[in-house]
Length: 266
Ligand code: MLT
Image (cartoon, rainbow, N blue to C red; front, side, top):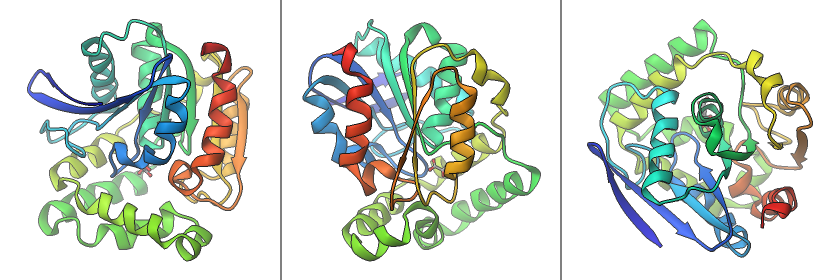
């Protein structure tokens, strides 16, 4: 079912499917909830799946110059309130969705039963990375999204996915091209100022699953394995042959990892 929730000055487009213990799927940058299309129905056979478009992305609205990760986490809590989801949720966030997961843990941990962290990072940007984001923000504001897929796809998808699954590359390209440059710039600025959360990891005392693509260039397996080792009891799964967008590149492996992890919440 598709919802359009008016919350404050923004309208949030949210897809929900299924019944059972809730799983919230929070997309990466610069994407929308369609990046989860391949996993929503299999997960919804056992769970209530909640897949929002973040503020300004996809079919959601909401315009700011700067999207702090804290604000995006507060938006997710407000979406859960508007959907009357009182039960604690499994929060699954990919990359930027993972940056939001840290803030959910910090600000709304009473809402969380479990975390699934896909292809994400705990470290903050260094000065070079933060400057590159500010440059990219100005560039999309002045020139639009046209150049973005060409620049990003080699970092988002493994070579094997790009060569053997061209429809995934095409779908991802179209998803990037339809994003609003003002939103993309605001998220870049927000991500450039996100905190280093490594010191938070040992305090995460809820069940946590960490998933990483073997060829992820943005959040590589060595870094994510280390991240998982800092979270007490966290499980780590590396998915072979894929890059940064594991749920699109291999939805089956994503579900094979998530469903047993959530089994006692069914
Ligand atoms: C994402 O997939 O959300 C981005 O790679 C996050 C980032 O730019 O750090």
